[in-house]
Amino acid sequence: MAASVGELVERARTGDARAVARLVTLIENAAPVLREVMAGLMPYVGHAAVIGITGSPGVGKSTSTAALVGSYRAQGRRVGVLAVDPSSPFSGGALLGDRVRMQEHANDPGVYIRSMASRGHLGGLSWTTPQAVRVLDAAGCDVVLVETVGVGQAEVEIASLADTTLVLVAPGMGDSIQAAKAGILEIADVFVVNKADRDGADATARDLRHMLSTGERRGPDDWQPPIVKTVASRGEGIDDVVAAIDKHRDWLAGSGRLDAKRRLRAADEIEAIAVTALRARMGDLRGGTVLDELAARVVAGEVDPYAAADALVAGVTS
Ligand SMILES: Nc1nc2c(ncn2[C@@H]2O[C@H](COP(=O)(O)OP(=O)(O)OP(=O)(O)O)[C@@H](O)[C@H]2O)c(=O)[nH]1
Ligand SMILES: [Mg+2]
Image 1 (cartoon, rainbow, N blue to C red):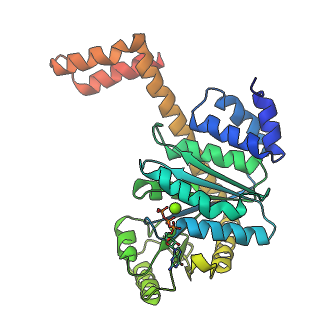
Image 2: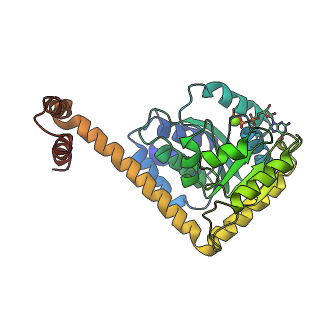
Image 3: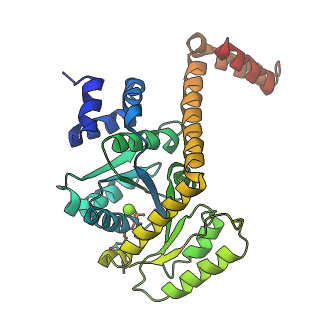
């Protein structure tokens, strides 16, 4: 017989890794008891620093994440790692690879490592990841590292759920240009030029600096993202990344932006949950027939789609 939610939350809070894993699985499965889980966790959250790690495939996110874990552990900080796969059907292998790289931390009770699929859920990252972060936070993690597998939308989404977003680029991948195109220059709080053992790292850093100084929307009161060079595979520069993250966090706290960021994040999460609930209710209206009937009437030209949508919303809210 499964443990009660209250027991699970209590065990997770005292750092029981299996309870933490069970709770994250409940989130992945969108289990109905999540409501109770979240209510139980709320008194214990708000402590962890949430760090998002993003960048093109193969740039070194997982290697950097593993190295960051080492650096934080050396400082005695407890660390959670979430490898989030929002979409890619190929992630199984990538996540497995990550697990291998994380092996050295696997037996450390001060580290929680968890891969998480969020595909298939409406709202995807927007509510599953914050909930998993909350579990790790309540479990006593000082830092939660969130690595997304896959590119595009996920990169921008991760920024809204992290306190500090690291954008990794590598020399010779045209990465700084791609970053500009994908709109991720704006989301970076710290730029990391990884694979600095390769030719072109200085040129890449220069490109980034140039792009940041031109076409920038950051004002004088805004955070100016530093550019840190690393060789993640050898652990070089990783302590500098940790220092840059800490500095950003101090700035966030001192400027009141941390609260603002967290309020925005909570708003996104509430909205995602509400939209999911509304969709479910729309689907349930009169056994799912209402939407079909309205669609038929739109096709027949009897009603316009706006009026049909109004009717649907009225059905849900009445
Ligand atoms: N030369 C060099 N290779 C590196 C460095 N960091 C990582 N690598 C290698 O680059 C490859 C990709 O590294 P990963 O950490 O898996 O990259 P990733 O961004 O997590 O990749 P995906 O999760 O597939 O997007 C691996 O073979 C690493 O060993 C580095 O600083 N220098
Ligand atoms: Mg990876």
